[in-house]
Image (spheres, rainbow, N blue to C red):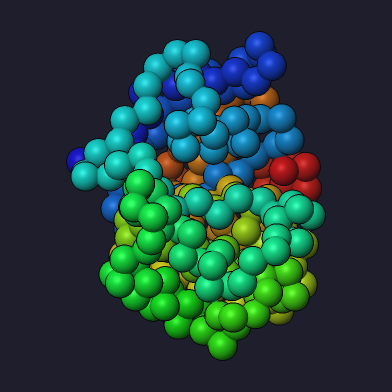
Length: 235
């Protein structure tokens, strides 16, 4: 059974339909890249997958044991987030908040998960440092470790390399690819078509005149790949 499946999904933004009758599914181990023009509904779709926005039509179904709170989410960075006054360790373990529930303290298991994810992302040495003292690339590693604390099934990444230099961008993409190869399913919103073509197993392309969903090979063979010729710079 699919981790996420949509049937005839329609979404609106400010009372205007931005996605109409869209159907796609994400299975365990997939690497789905969501690409599209500005205003095509990418952000609205992300909010709907996180259950922050209700569809105006159709449905989103979670399966294969995935619960809504088990989606690890890495949002686009804002200036306020970059200046967050907390230690790296505090930011990372906060990814366990949903699992902690009403308990006042983190469990030994949750502390271990946070430590393992900091080690996995190469940021253990920064555990006691202030998050806002780190570079942009280091901060993204911290937020990715935080997202991993929330899930072992699915990561939803919204423009994860925005504002990063080319070397750091490549390093982060490789980390995400390694996480996917370890068995974590990836959904990534991106305007970077080169990255989508290199890493994705599936493409969801949103345009003002419709949408396409399929494997990378199907995308390249379809008319939707015309997006590469003129629309990518507007994504």
